[in-house]
Length: 338
Image (cartoon, rainbow, N blue to C red; front, side):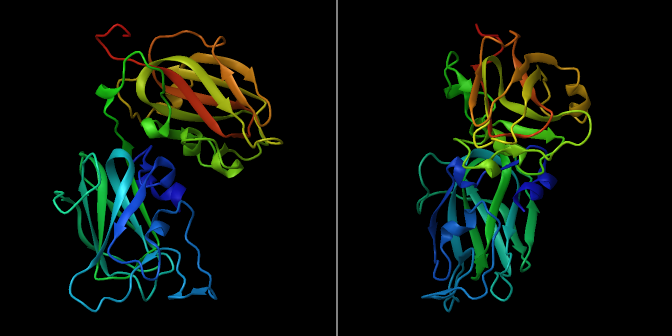
C-alpha cells in the first residue's frame, strides 16, 4: 500500500505523517476500541480474526466507540516536517461495518501545538468514505502546513492515514556555511525514479537514521541480464557537494559490488525527460568498490564541480543500499558560495 499509493499525487511525494520523520497523533476525541497511534503505523494494516482485548474486537487502526451524543470524532496529527500536501489516503482496510461514512481534513501552520484558539483551514471538504479500501483524495493547495485535524462523521475506525506531499523547510534559517545532508528526506530530498525496487523502496535510501533491517533500505532484484541498477534523487536544495556516504548496513550477501554517482544542476525540479537526460550527467563520484554491512565515506574521490540539484546513484550490477547521504553547503545565487 505505502509504496504505490502516493504516485497519483506526484513524482517524489512522501508520507509527511510517517513516524520516522517525527509525525505523531497529538490528541483524539476518543480511542476506545483502537489507539490513535495505530493510524500512522508505516506497516500495512492486518486483520487477526480471533484477537480480542478488554474493549472488544482488536482492530489495527484508530477506532472510536459508537457515538450516542451529537457531534463527531476527530484526531489532531503533527506532521513529521512542514510541507505542501498533494494527496491524502484515509484507509479503512478491514473496517467493514464500523468505518465512518464521511470525513474531512483541516490544516494549520503553527510553531507549537494547536489549542482552542488555533485557526484551522479546510484542506479537504467533507467526503464520503468506503469501507475496507484506500480512500484517495487529491489536494489542490500550495500552502505549507504543520498540523492536520482529521474529522470523522460521526464515529468509527480508520486503519491508516497517509498524507502525501513535499517537505518545505525555511531555508532562510539555515546558515550558508553549514554542511547539510542535501539528499535527506527530512530536509526535502526526494527519490524520483529507479529502474527497480523489488525488495525495498527507493525512498528508504534518504530516510532518517540508520536502516532498521534490509527491508528498510533500497534493494533491487537479482539481475539476470547485462546492465546495472540506478536511482535518481532530487536534492532538497541545490548545493556544492563535499562528501558522499553510501551505507550497506545489513546487506551482507546482497550488497552491490561497486557504486558511482552522476550529478547535474536543473532549474526545473521536475522533467519528463529526467531519466534519459541522466545518462548524460557528469560524474560526481567515479566507480568505487563497496563492502558488506559497512558505511563508506567518499571525499577525496569526489570530482569537484559547481552546485548540483540532482544526483543519480548507479550500483553495479544490483543489490541493496541502506542509506545515501550527500553532504554539502547550500547554493544561494548572489552570495559568496554561488
